Every structure is written in structure tokens, then in C-alpha cells.
Image (tube, rainbow, N blue to C red; front, side, top):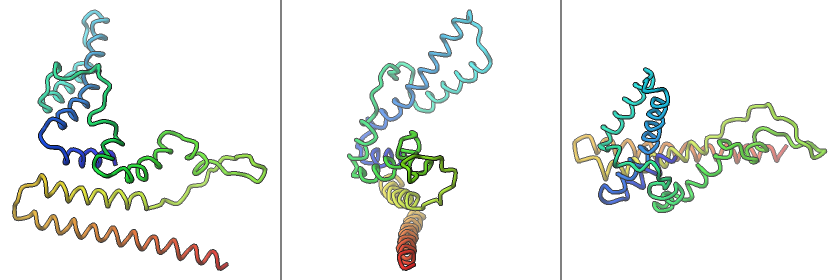
Length: 203
């Protein structure tokens, strides 16, 4: 989801300034690692291990492909490019998508309490908790939402970035068709849930 927000945010920008910040931000960690390797080599009296040589070469390739020099990257900065991920999402009207697709599911990533009581603990009648070792059924709502956002941003990318050529219309038609298919699947799943709840109530 963060990739989609980043792409839409970059598509909304004019010129290359923000894209350069996007690249520079990523290369900071590469430069920090390069400096750490050099310090380790120096502490070893100048001996360079084969793995260090490969790592340094990989970092140099990243800089070369990105069109940046080490001097152009401020590894001491901790400021994010374009603000926080939520700020970028809000700037392109995706704050609701961020909250529902990234904010809520992140409970399981960070090991939050909400993840524990939802997926890993059972609440007993005596107000205690016991481990829940059962697997829960996968829910498609989040994948459906991500798929819809992906197609929408793909359509935007197609219009803003891809030049006109004979297959562009065909790609657009396929993206439009995919959008409809995802929406239909999402709608059918919602009806399935509602019908199942009705049947449970009638029992």
C-alpha cells in the first residue's frame, strides 16, 4: 500500500525535485552501510573481507544507477521525503485508504494489543485470556481494496506517464475491465456475508 501511495504522490508532483528526494532518502541507508563497512576495514588494519568487497560494489552500483554521488546524499538526515507516509497519503486524497488498509492491519505487524485479542487470545467467562491456536479464515476485503486502488493508480500512471501508442488503448480497456471484475467480486462477497448472518439469526 505504501508503494501505491508513493507512486500516486510522485505522479502528482511537477518536475524532478521530489523524485530526487525520493531517491536520496533511500540511498542514505546505503551510504551509512558503506561507511560502516569502511570503519570495520579500518579497524581490521585495512584488511577487506570478500563479503565486504561485494557489498561495497553493490552499493556503488546502486549509486551509479540512481545517478547520485555519495556527496549528494546526506546520511545524517533523518527527515523523510515528502513528509510522513500519512502526510503523503493525505496530500493525494488517500488518507482513508491509509487508515483502513495500512493503519488497522499494522496491528499484526507491530504486535499490538488489538492483534492479540483478535487473533491470538480467547476471552473466557472468568475474564481471563487463554491462547487461541486456531487458524482464522482469510478475509478478502483488504486484498479487494488494495486491488481497486492498484488498478486506479495504474490507470493514472497509464495516462500521465505512458506515451501514446497502439497498445495503450488495449491496456486501458483491460484495466477498466479488471476494475469492474474486482468490484463485482467484492459486492458478491458482501452479499454472501449478509446472507450468512441472516441464516445464523434464523436458527
